[in-house]
Length: 517
Ligand code: BG6
Image (cartoon, rainbow, N blue to C red; front, top):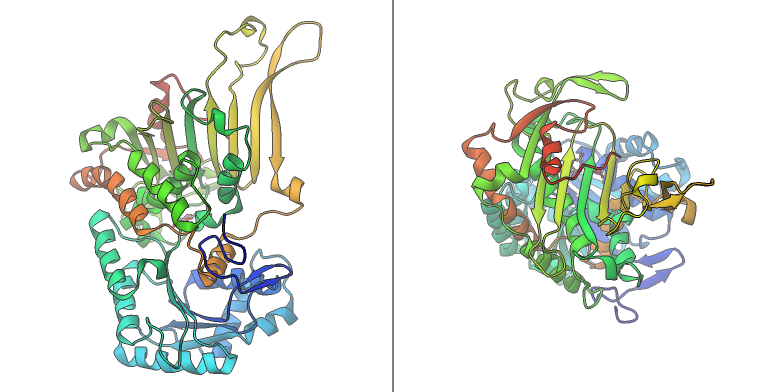
């Protein structure tokens, strides 16, 4: 447990406001601030924190990018993102109060003059807002700029406290952290030349989702599930992150990435770690992160030759999603007409430890699938003796425990029950919990929680360097096989389907089926 008065990572908790924990004064410097992420996610999340009273009075955002905005033009640009977004009702007077904390500095961080000017502006904004020096840098730039940006922060003397700007320095780095193992290691070395590991916050926004945080609570705050959470009772686990959207104008990024890099290396491995790790000895950031690394290290590495047996990739062809005709991936903007990039992947992993030996974990994710749905489905072993099978009216009951990540947020357990009537008939029924019904609210945006934690110095929900390293290592044989032969293990599926037919065989040859959401 965290010491009283300290956050789980040991950072002193400065103030307890009515609504929750308020971080100490700080200036958040966002690089790449004219981009979509700032407008659609970061600033709406900060505005939400502000409205909940979770930001300190002495707080400011300083955006930097090449677009020549004035402070006011930048505020107007951000306001449009909030007023037109899905963040609940827009409240002009709260926005006016919040907008006064937002500033903008045009500049190209590659240019040393801009870096100098940025240093001066950081001091000016901090003085104006009474911020005594704590700085969080947020790298929301294209991945190729991570290293030059971090170097420039170091060279400009902004990475370490000074007499006139004391306090902490932290850097938040957006994904993707690297493109493969080698580039991730190189980036890590470059970051560590300027910052210590405890100053680095690598974003995986899945960890900011309430339903993902609830996995550990569900497992370890209740005594009844953990005794069943192992190979003796669990047949297999399916982790699905399905999207109905396509590449949404990000064709150039996606062509380089593909879903294995974009989703499996980070989000799906994090879901897998939460569901399969051992209980940590405390809630301290490093105790939790140690268990996650241990789990990832227990995954059986797949050899390059075996990739074809455990993995099916796919790419969407034209099709119909939500009643609308949509184009093929190859027809999307900035995508090559002969592209062999995967928009779908299903991979079977096994975990070589006492808890999970022999239990397959099937991970699948894709774009332009039949719906938007993320879930972890745990399939329990069947009853040893099917007393009732002759009288079943429906399918044989599969005991599934499903952790719904989104869009429905909750948990349900599927089991068999006797249908009313004179004969014994068994039908599947559900116990169900939803956030909305139990707490009267849907969960909060992931970025708000993560920004707050970065300001509080709590790194629990941020992957550590060794986690990133091991997840790239696990994918290395896959990436290297496809580098040699880019079309391998790749099949097409019509948009709106649940992936290529070949993905069914990954499970059917073992007598299993994908859960139909
Ligand atoms: C991002 C990926 O990390 O996660 C996107 O880059 C993907 O391609 C997104 O669409 C999915 O996030 P969410 O929260 O909508 O499930």
